Length: 342
Image (cartoon, rainbow, N blue to C red; front, side, top):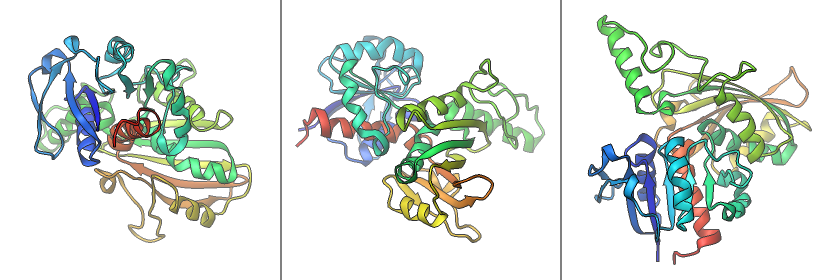
């Protein structure tokens, strides 16, 4: 016996990826519904590579009663309007937006890191999915923190345009084409040219000069992993279609060698260590696309601080950063709480 699952925002990048991953992982389903805004109502979309097609339903008229889980990938505005409605109807919400992440009554979950925190979902019947950059970072940090205690993290991100949705991907494509053919090339979606450039600005600026994306990485890491860890972040948009990368500097409470870190990461859940000190002996976003793992490379000691390490972390942001993590939460919820599947 399986579950009745709704994917809200099913026609967007993350929503489509949720459907792909539910199909790939053979999630135990009795029924699946694709739901989106009125403008997509009636569209036909694929349920992964299963050969099954789904007709998109209108979120404004959808009745969540009788459905077990709803995976939301429609943004904060839709989550604000419809997630509480779904939760009140008895359908557990797994929300990919930032809306509920810092709500003390909503667990913020990365299954490899803090699976036990899911027990608190009953307070609001909502579970939050973290920011894409936070998700991959805490998967890499968790086993190291368990072993040596992390004091401080300094992270610089190299985030792909797919993190900004279809409009971001379209702008990179159009600008790249325009530059090659000599057409006008004014930014429309991003604040500056993204093709052949990098932009040190993601989300709104805050009063202290940081951006909201950087703030998310700080507060979400503390909530998921350990409130005592000090985190500082610089988040940068780069001209890559899919795949976020991070350069992470870590200070530990006790000494940890690069070899010890490599040994720990090699066995860590959700991590794939690819760390050969030779040409090409590391992972780039291109290799991470379509994969489930969080890849770690370039592990090395930092001699400028006590008990310091550097590492390079790469993941498919549409997968581990969003859709895969949501499906993993759904799997965890089923195993620990709903226990409906045979």
